[in-house]
Image (cartoon, rainbow, N blue to C red; front, side, top):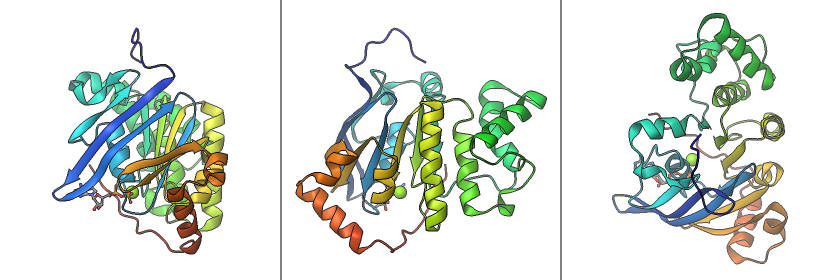
Length: 266
Ligand SMILES: Nc1ncnc2c1ncn2[C@@H]1O[C@H](COP(=O)(O)OP(=O)(O)O)[C@@H](O)[C@H]1O
Ligand SMILES: [Mg+2]
């Protein structure tokens, strides 16, 4: 935690006019929004619109061409490595496709952040791992390997790992993509329960409207590299805003079309 900093009123994370291009592909075209402490903000947008790229900027895994991300009033892109590492300890990330290490057991995957950041080991680490796995409904499976569990269980393990350091903010990238509808619903419920249990601020990236309205307090809709609309889930569903109506109409037409699940590794 960073103490003694006065951040903008109510704004916990402030994303301001982010631009990011890859060659001639201008992906983020002035993304601006706020995240309030304790809320679940969903970033909704079509496949390929830049949601994963945006999420990576929020913890400075990618740097923008211009713009800023303030965490508690401080621009993370201006931080030196030690300060950034401190800030990152407050963030837990559930990557698209879970991104577990296959050569390690489930328990080793979940325990890795605590081992690396705090030097936790032995009995203490086992206890922490079991506690986090139990929170996501997977007590007793620490000895298994990722190859021995289902896709839904992998997402749960990825969440257990993301909450291992008791983060202030949990970032989820497409938590339900690639899961069958029943498993997807279970993950949606788990995200909501985790939110209630831990009270962490959550930022969830998804292209799934149902998931967005189920788990979100507020939704930011990304269209053409900008946030076109921000509002509560009720406001999203009732607004006459054209981009929102179009997105909802298209979503209903494409409902069953799966999104390719490409995982970026670091
Ligand atoms: N590391 C990268 N290098 C080049 N282009 C990238 C990279 N990451 C993402 N992109 C491009 O940025 C665009 C947005 O990608 P992404 O954020 O993954 O979309 P979404 O998550 O909304 O489906 C895509 O056109 C993608 O090809
Ligand atoms: Mg993505």
